[in-house]
Structures are given as C-alpha cells and as structure tokens.
Length: 225
Image 1 (cartoon, one colour):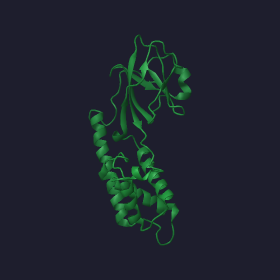
Image 2 (tube, helix red, strand yellow; image 1 turned 135 degrees about the horizontal axis):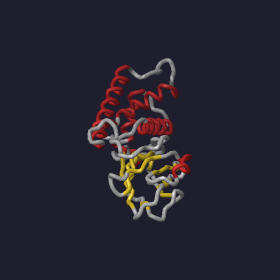
Image 3 (cartoon, helix red, strand yellow; image 1 turned 180 degrees about the horizontal axis):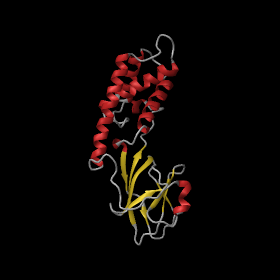
Image 4 (cartoon, rainbow, N blue to C red; image 1 turned 180 degrees about the vertical axis):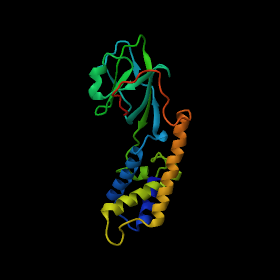
C-alpha cells in the first residue's frame, strides 16, 4: 500500500477530498503518532560507526546516525560490556565513571565516559525516525517502500487520518465521527500490529518480557532515552 493508496482510502472513509496540504499533514501526523507511541521492534537499527578510543574524554562528541530517534542499548566491544545511560544534564556527575553514555539530542551527539585500554567498536541499537510523509512528491507517493510498516498494517494510517479529520478539521453535525465499523476495524488492526511487534520484540530479548539485566549496579538516576 503506497502513501497515495492510504490517502485514497482515507478519502473513501470520510467521503470527502481535502486539500493536498491537509491530507499530507494528516498522513504525517498519523504516521508520527504511531511511530512515537512505543519502542517498536520494526524501527530498531544497529549502528557500529562509533569508536570509543583511549584518548577520548567525557567531552568528546560522537556523531549519531542522522535518523536517530532514541537509544535502546549500547555495548562497547562485546555483549558483556554494556554502557548505561545518564541524563545529559547530569554528565558532570559521571564524567569520571566508566561505561556511561549520554545523548545530546539537539545536536545528535553522544558522549562516552571512561577511558578504555584499547579502541572499542560501539554497538548501538537505536530506534530510528522514518522519513516524514509530509510534502511527498508524486513519485514518492507512488512507492510501496515510502512507508516502512508492513503493508498489511498501513490501512491503520487511513483510519487514524479520519479520526484526526473528524476530530477537528471538519467536525460538523453531519460528519462528526467515524462510522462504528471503521472504529472497530481500526482497533482490530492496531491490536494486531502491536501483537506482531510484541512477538518480534520478545524474540529480540530472548523471549523475556523485559531487557535482560546486566551484572553491574546501575546509577540511581539512570534514565531511558
């Protein structure tokens, strides 16, 4: 299902044809809302471009991937050497500690603490931010690869667009809410998508309901990014 097909389905649901700018904004808003609502296995990437070198200090900045959204796990060299997140505003407290990292989201930079005896390749699992769907060209609207979700879940975007549309942009007495069958279909599709991703996430975590603990005392004010 291409972005244009999502838009076409949305217009069938609402029985209307809003402007290109309106449909583009609704599509991107629906997409962003879903992508940011949870940690998705389908949006997980691994980056190995960062190296923690012996000469680095806590002030040394490492460039994050351009599509970075949030960090999930970080390891230096191997799976037994996990680095723990600390608040960006609290990095001074941990600048002399080993195996800590912080994220400067405004500048897409990472800082690492400690001084390894040899250079370590950093294995960063992170949530990436898919390309915006606002202002797509006609060519991009026709591609099945523009939306990164599995095709079977993409109709959910049309239902979300309709809910947004009826909720504010065109909330008159005639069309002030989605039809009951559309609401039911949207809820069922959302449930199926989350169940599918939960199964994939469980496999990533060795079928545990939460990430496996590490054998190190965590900082008291560690935060999840």
